[in-house]
Length: 380
Image (cartoon, rainbow, N blue to C red):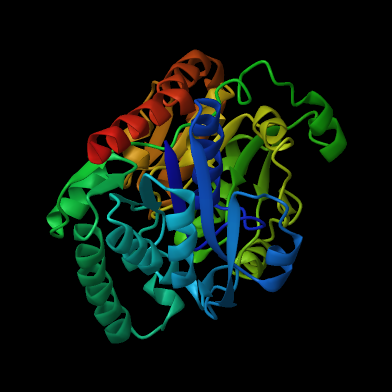
């Protein structure tokens, strides 16, 4: 089977959408399928690309969030789709590359699958700080989402709560297919001891958060919970890893609260081979985000045998099971966040095997088989 992925974000970007695309591509190709990537990118990415199955379309930065780009001439992909003999087109975005996927599917009479990765209506603060404008933008976003995904032959939601949300807003033909993880690469046998020594954390309890540093990730709650945690567990350290437009804001909040001594802030993109080491070096993964359509980092942490303390919100409330593989808290309550972190740190060993069992349900092979079955249904 020949499959074309269309996406607004791709390497060198590192985010959940790119992780999903790379994970599915790898296992689909191992299964004998051909996967082609049509993506937005700058001239540097295009000129340096050595992958014959990746096609960059020159794009302009999206000003409110520069790492995302809007392709200027995405419809040139039509001819390539025809010459490759693509069987199914899979859109991973809704902007210009998403529109190009729609046009390619229509002109070549191929089935179109769309994955709803990002809760765009919850990110309207990038457009304006004014409440009235944000509300208007949110309404428009949902109308556009309904129109776009109803043009697809099938819409993939990465979790049940997102499927239900899409249906509530009028999207038809939605089904749940999560992005899987590599449960061999992320596993409890990975040792984080050398990394703990390198970071000077040998004698500490380590609370980890890893991901994009954006306001919708709600890291304020974790930062504001820290003093309460430290009252009970003074040897605790907080390890924050990632990049994003809110990095400065979160650093200033840490400084304002006088917490620089207890927070280690690694404002960088970690190479993929090093990521399991950071999970392994932690004692608990904490995610207060109110923006997760699935939460791949949660599954990666659990695959490494780490309990997760997360927001009782959207997809996180599906994956995290109270007192089984971690704990949940009100995403607006630093006090409850601190309470759950303390509880899990004091009982972390009882969660290890259950966390691993949860992650095994989301192996990339299992999820890819579901995706292939969907493609086959649409092609026939």
